[in-house]
Image: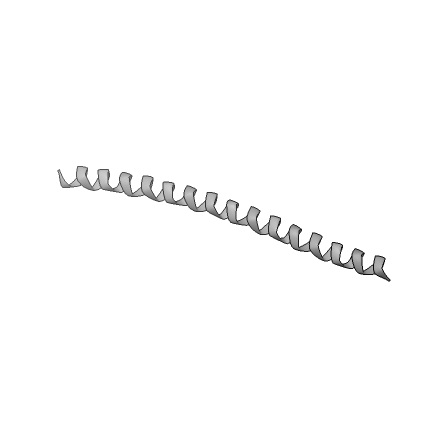
Length: 57
């Protein structure tokens, strides 16, 4: 009976650890995607500002 409890608790802890690893991986991927989108947005706004400046001149 004790062995069954130890196996159950060990499995539970392994599942919690696996969940934490997966969530951390997703957070890192989201941060990278967000950084990429922000850099693309900056490039777009810089390009539009230059075009608007040329049109104004």
